[in-house]
Length: 151
Image (cartoon, rainbow, N blue to C red; front, side, top):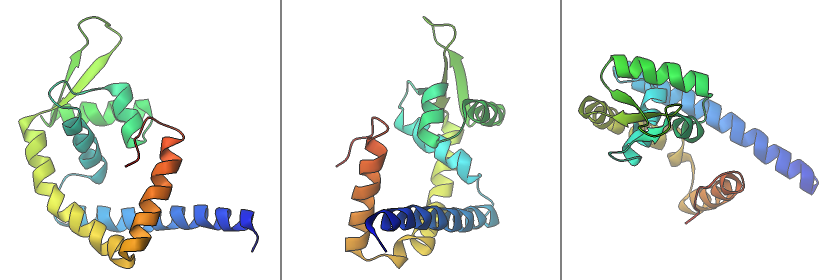
């Protein structure tokens, strides 16, 4: 296999691993009666946004969903009280999303199942060295396309 083929195979392996691990984790989360994994990811990012929250565009960028999908998802979460939405006081075109106390509670309740799933369906299959290499390599790729900092 030449150098280019190795990189294509790495891409394929990433897609296969992501698909199978996420499906298995989603199944675990649903089986345990928790919020959907996409909601968990949105709430996790909103918690990171602090009291101010995040602009809807920032939410879409961080959770890798289209703006339209994020908008519908956040609307549904807001109806259930997990998120609040508010217009920007200066730029009326901007809407902010903020995690609520109920959203924080849902995040805390789901976290153990999610973390157990990450271990069971992903992390336990890697040595510490492999996990370090994967994390550094994938963060380098992400950083090449975003403002994510690599540690």
